[in-house]
Every structure is written in C-alpha cells, then in structure tokens.
Length: 322
Image (cartoon, rainbow, N blue to C red; front, top):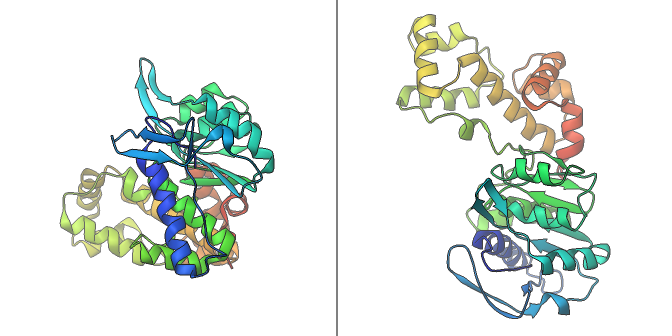
C-alpha cells in the first residue's frame, strides 16, 4: 500500500482492516495477507484527517514480484475544481512494478496515479464521482465510468471514493478465497454484506431525497419487498388510501421522483444485484424483479444504465457468482 502526505485515511485503513479481518477469519497464517506500507521515504506521513501513518519502507526499496499493489488517493479543491493528488514517486513505482504484480488496485482518486503511469489506457475504470470528469479530461484514453462503486478490468481494479475501497477489498478476498470468506469477513466487521461492484454511486437510496413522510418511507420498503407484484400507480395509491392524482403529487413532493420512475429505478437496482450474484436467466431476472419480460428489462437497462443486461453481467458478475 502506497502512502503519502495528504492521503485519505480510510483509503488506506479500510482495505487494511478487510485484509486483516480476512486473515483472522481464515485462521491460516500461510494463506492470509501480509500488509506493508511504502512511501517516498520510510517513516511518518500525515493523512488528510491529520492522523499519522508510518511507512515501513521507501517505495524505491520495494522489489517485485508482489501480489497486490494498492494505490489510495486524495482529492483537493483547486481553482478549477477537484484535483487529484499525483505523487511522482508512486507513479514511478507503479510503472516499475505493475508488470510483476498479480493485480494493481486503486482507491478513489488513486486512479489518477495509475492513469499517469499509463496503466489505464484502453481500460474501463471508476473513481470517486467528484473527480470522474477530471480523470476523463486528463486521460482521454481511459474509459471512465462514474457510476459503479468498483470495476475490474483484467488485472486492474479501481473503485469509487473512500468507503468503496472496503467493498472492493471484500471482492478481492472473494476472488482469492471464495465468497463465503468474504461474507464472514464482512460479518466480523459488522458491514453491509456484499455490496456489489455494479451498485451505483447514485443508487436509489442515495439519488433520491429522503422522504419526510413516514408513510412514504414505509411504502418504499414495501415496494422493495414486492417488486414482482403489480405495482401500478393506482395500486400504490389504493395502498396509501389516496386518489391517484393526490398520491402522485404527494410521492413526488416527498421523494423528488414520480412513482413510475422510482419503481423502475428500484427494479433496475434489484436486477443489477441478481445479475451480479447469480447465473439466473434474463427471463428469470425479469420475472423476479417485476419487469414482466426480457424486452422491458432490456429497455429499462438501456434507459437507466446505457447498457444491456447481458453486457452488464459480463462486466460486473462477481467471480464466485453461481
């Protein structure tokens, strides 16, 4: 793990805790993870929060081959907006060591240092939504997707901001040791179990304003549990004991979305999880998530994600799915 002055603390400690917990759960010292921090020099570095980290070794002393090279990031506000921190010593180390690494990982704006090293040319990557536009402008050969929380393209893994580094690291553990160990690690750390890589940085719960009305919140929970049911606006209005017109107005005021748009977004998000985690046919996915037909599933994915369900599965399906 590379460290530098101003690094985002959780970009380093989040993945480190996942690897450490996985080693504890695995209960096999020979099969677990050994973590080493490397910086421009050995010794102390001050993180963005002020907490200090101590590098075990200088980057210039790191020799390959190594299993995993992890580059965390840091975003700072410049005169023209968010600017990623670029550390020349880290870029040089990525350039030198990447060919002998089994995988190279970036967290948050660390993707900019991988891009500066030329490692991301022609690859699909993600980063924190705050810096995605900047990454795309600075490195036009890189296909930047600001939506998912993490992406794997060959031996390169990239992820969104801060806490997404823990989700990505759980995926690394699953890739190394199987899905069950990753789930047991998440349980040990009292984490949300297995947040999938394709989950949007702007998922349904995050992209809509939290409704002030308790009855609308309860309806949203009921919708999530009954996506395969008939959920037309008249059906939802009857459940709320409102007229169709009044219900549509109240729902939009409470959530910032129409009922139909919210329902489609919720169904797409559910379908994303099924596509990532199982080998179910598209017809089964469409039925389970309430789309009714593969054609409707296809149209919703095109409209919401600008891709097809099959392409989405190929890109984000977890290694242990099925």
